[in-house]
Image 1 (tube, rainbow, N blue to C red):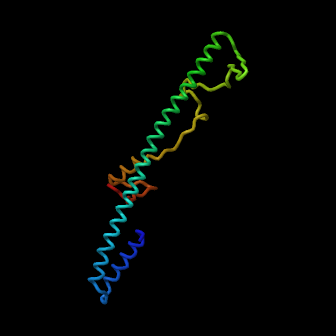
Image 2 (cartoon, helix red, strand yellow):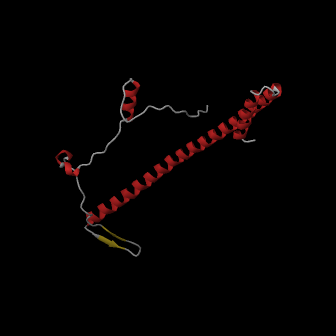
Image 3 (cartoon, rainbow, N blue to C red):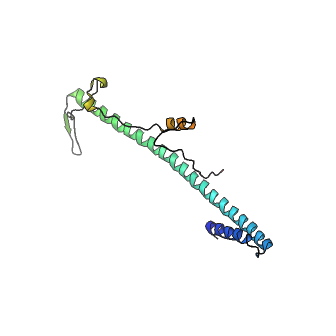
Length: 160
């Protein structure tokens, strides 16, 4: 039986217990059995959750390892390109052509270098609005009110 079915049956038996004509002893025994079944299902689901969380952690670690490897390879490519550029520049060769590759250097498109951001006119500055939720929460917890927000309490499942 699925957990939701067990829960539904459990609630039905609880409702039957309120009926004066119901056989209380048999219903209580059925309730005990259902509670045991629900506990077993809950434990199995908790095991599954822990197993999946373990998989997630393994994937996170593999992502870190792969990210590190990617960064190492990117740094190697940059280093090799810088080395080749420096050697071409030092020898005065602007272009080298081989049967497989053509290698050359050229001027890039102009880019902007910010020298003093405080001298830049306001028309070229955009400000981002950021709501300081932690500060608002602390103010509300201290007993003050802040318009436009409500304090809400939620629940979540914990598995230990």
